[in-house]
Image (cartoon, rainbow, N blue to C red):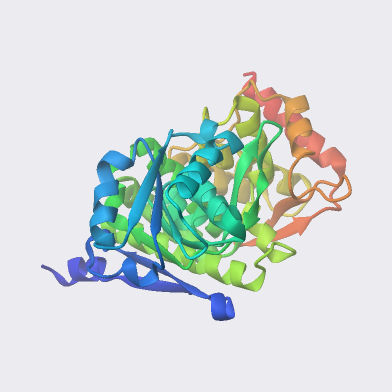
Length: 372
């Protein structure tokens, strides 16, 4: 085995600092097969929450990793369309019917939808139980599994019902990405690119140079992208756990993107696809507000295009639909939409005092392009 191959296999750890509630993000290959790793974070009985796509592939690996730990599992339907309170009842039913008490552990085995729902179950079941994330998609590994946001969708808005509930560990097993469909991989790249936009221009430049390797699933490139993304998110989240300030920067492109998801019907566009188009809209508006140049907009759009991600929303989501869903966004305070805009690539700001006409100009511009 070469030195570079050995470095890929080495497990790396990113820490999220919440004092006594701090926890590790373990990043490496074959973590599910590493003896004793999972069990060191489990207390009491374990309930594995997964879905019908992931269960046939990875559920047995997790059961094997748990060994003699008493455990049960609940297999949910797959997809954003099932991220609802109705589906949540399946988790609560499994916990209650199997006699799980407050000393149990909920394990999320799946992508962002499973992580958000399992986390919300852990936050709310008997007012809070132990929680472990085992993300199986690139997007979940770099974003939704990190930081403790949990919840479900409502028909009037995405993630409108939920809670902050930190896991005790995140185990990002790079090996599971081998079974990830190409479309899901690209959706994860959208959130990775986001970190370059908002925090780290050097990382953005690295992504420009390495996008071909990432799309080819080069293990070394993906491991670096996951680690750097988790480092950035860990620092932001540790400084602002409950999103009262700077954590909102992580929502760059999301106010537009969530409107796309809701307008299209949850699941028709993947989260990362909607966020990609949303980030281009945020770039356009940043330029209209005099914050960034046309060159920076073009540079951002080019990287998303290189990742084979959408740079325009679907024509079905028109201006009125955007405005309607954006006003229901969680970042709206006293009726004022707060948007994440860029002062430069690598530096984002939260803005509530933007000129509303600039938002209308962006929505009109996008509408004209989608009609072409």
